[in-house]
Amino acid sequence: MKFNRRTVLMAGVALGASGWRLSLAQAETRTLTVLSHKVHENVARGLTPGTTGGDVAGEWAKKNSVEFNWVTGNIGPIHDRLGRELSLAESSVDLAFVINKFHTPRIAALLEPLDDRIKAEPIEILASIPESMKKAVTYKGHLTAIPVRHATTGLHWNKTLFAEQGLDRAPQTLDELVEYARKTTYTRKDGTRVAGLVMNSGDEHVAVLTLLSAFGAKLFDENATVTANSPEMVKGLTTMAQLYKEGVLAQNYATMSIDDVITAMQNGRAAMAIDPFARYLVYNNPDSSKFPGQIDVVVTPSAKNPKGTAITEIWSMAIPHNAKNKDLAYSLMRALSTKEAAIRMALNGNGPVDPNAYSDPRVQQKLPYSKAESEAVQIAQVIPSSFDRSIEATAVFREESQAAVLGLKSPEDAANSMQSRIERLVK
Image (cartoon, rainbow, N blue to C red):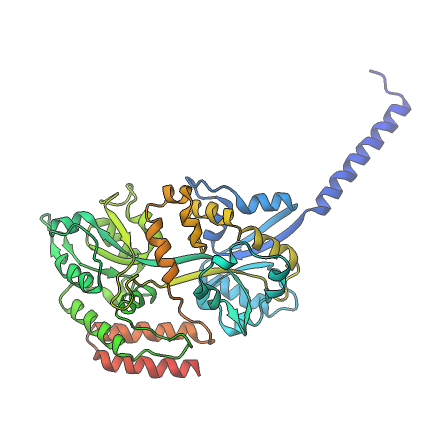
């Protein structure tokens, strides 16, 4: 083929125009930096094998010509990073996922208030999110984050172990919970020693507080006043101390981690566990559990509330006050807070903060415990973090409650010490 000067010139012009269009497209692509735990990227983007919700965040990114710089880490490190970013003149983080116990005044004061943005561009599921969750991320009357994920406690129970002890249903009252825990503390025919009730009591506070809340105990009342030395707290600690003495609670109670709880339930060394509802999938995993399909979960019964009791931890999306791309970050926040997004992320393993998501047939088919979890979410308590030393307060609770359960202190002394020490932290 012969090329004349005109052909070469036209080809050069075409290539130049094509390159100009490519450069323009590249220039129009924006980068959004998201700081979160890896689980949030997984549920927003459908990255976990076997999930069916799809790439909710990716679809928004494609529509808005956005590339993600998704920075992930464990809870402590990402909140440390957020604290450093908030202290800068300009943050490199545009959207941050914050767990409620770190939403302290020191952090909340440096997050973007969302009220005006919500008024101009509403969040679709905002009205459906339980008030306790929204209150947990409100600072000086302004909403500073949008809840997106919860981990709410339930009572898991092993049908096989219950049947071996003549029980055919989950406990429906607090008295039955205690009674069944005693009945299912036994030695199986194969020599396995079973503890009636286990919980993560070594490095967390949520499960233990759930059990104590069944007696009516609270660390704080609705006005964030410390109520740790209530008669209900003393009664709950007294019962737990007796159960520990009888061997009903695991004998490694003071050091029991979540991994220990999972192993005990999967191997049949525990009949019941207080743990987030989503642990159902782990307990029934046929690849690791000796009891696949035999471990169910219900709302933990309460002596004070006929609907039961539950405590939740929530993750929320927040925009740093010094972020560069606030409008874009809020657009993603809205995209992840639609009714359909809540459903699809639930299919990806998220705990939906919109209780209506549990009514969707797709979610009900995926999560056998969806009805019970929906009920728990609507009554779940969120531990206040309205003072800067709230993390220390939960550590004090764990220390003093352990002393009572192990018999190192009387329940009265432990509750009174808890009260005075937390009051000092609040002040």
